[in-house]
Image (tube, rainbow, N blue to C red; front, side, top):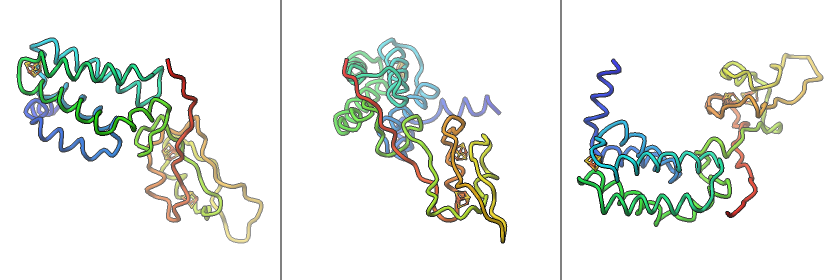
Length: 202
Ligand code: SF4
Ligand code: SF4
Ligand code: SF4
């Protein structure tokens, strides 16, 4: 089965990867998805600008998406990789990937810079958001308790004629931001908040 999947990935066309990546609203996630699919699929490792460039781009994008020791230099390095790939790649796949990097950064540079400050406005970078429950909207139905595999939700399902309940709450340290609770909550009480990080330009 894995072998079949690997062959499918290898046969994946660049245009398909690009199209699939457009399902991501966040440009960092879009580029990360593209790199991961390209590396595990059509990229053949025959030349350095493409094989090393995409590997380095993936590392930088991961750092940006997690706000992990990232700074504006990461964006400059990504651009450099893009230009190097356009110039030095042996085939069209590498050159087109370089162009994809440059075009996406040029058209969404502000959003890339926002990630350096720790803000993902599309809330797709899970390390940059937190899940919270709005007590005004929560009816204590307990549905979210059933779907949370991480046991990250504190609360007790409300029973008729009982009082003294504490509001439902999400334990941030346990929450993996998988999004399952949001899908099940019947009242829209679970929200995604953008975390605020301190920006340090290096
Ligand atoms: S540019 Fe082409 S030949 Fe070079 S590693 Fe990428 S896919 Fe292979
Ligand atoms: S599913 Fe929604 S309404 Fe029900 S307990 Fe959880 S947060 Fe509250
Ligand atoms: S996002 Fe996932 S891990 Fe976090 S509270 Fe909801 S179900 Fe649990």
